[in-house]
Length: 401
Image 1 (cartoon, rainbow, N blue to C red):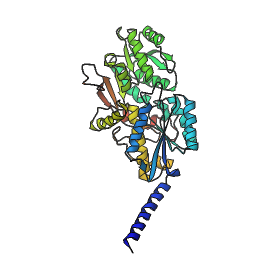
Image 2: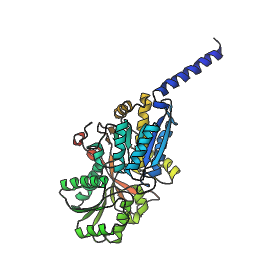
Image 3: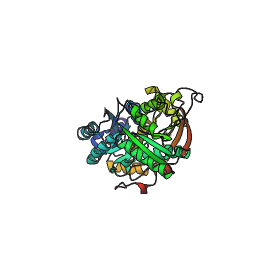
Image 4: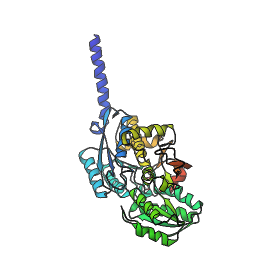
């Protein structure tokens, strides 16, 4: 047999193997859809940064997995559940999107969960926080990756009560996330011997917090808990400072605060604020290296939501790579089988209720004097083990667990 013929047969064999591998991939493409807030309250927390993070995961596979190209599509859901659901349905029905990712805002995640359930698509939730996503509102294909309201309550709520903050008043975003966060923190506060004196619900999003801060002042509570996030948290803290809430002796507990919020507020305003985080860019060499790559593309250090988006998409692609298939049930089984080990999580476990259990961290915002430069904002006070943060599986009411 001639060398030319042997080479021809070899090339044909490689082509056939590649074709067989791609045949296990529906329509020959692995397509991931990032639905996020590109323009409103959570755009700094999530937004374009989550698109960059998802693409960074794809780049680690050089754009192909199991012999098939990986494609990323994105859309701005504007924090509106109907827009998110319609876009997810369109993606699934007409564009063969295999998985929905990010999904900041609980109402959005819940709406997309319904579509994912109907279409048997995987939903990789990073931005939405409500603990019911892996309990009463769970679906078989819904994975909750970055944090939840229970973990935030265990971290910040418990720490503040132990420091003497035993009476609370909440400023709560008036939708599912705010309600879930207030409920989870209330349980922790009362379990620690504290008392909740009241709450004021504010619109989502809100710009004027004057009346809500006045109600918090009038309550006499030692702690004003902010059961909100993003721009709402920033505006609430600014209003509290303007009304002299802290100067008068009350303490602000930011229950979901991000690095981007601290950056917006400045250390002079945010110093001393305790917060529970899923990720901090300056924790070790691996987080610093990944975050620098992110910074080079965005001009900002990543939030936990953005880092969590990278981790969830990476694990999804690892499962496809290991199985050679993008079949939903096959991929889910492999994702649960493999521990989550990347720069975001160490030995994370994906439970049957969809919760990805990993360590969380209680952090405190540095003073201007403690900071050594831009983005050097936090000091880690305590590592909260995953089981403590998220509780046992037995606490979940998810019917599919």
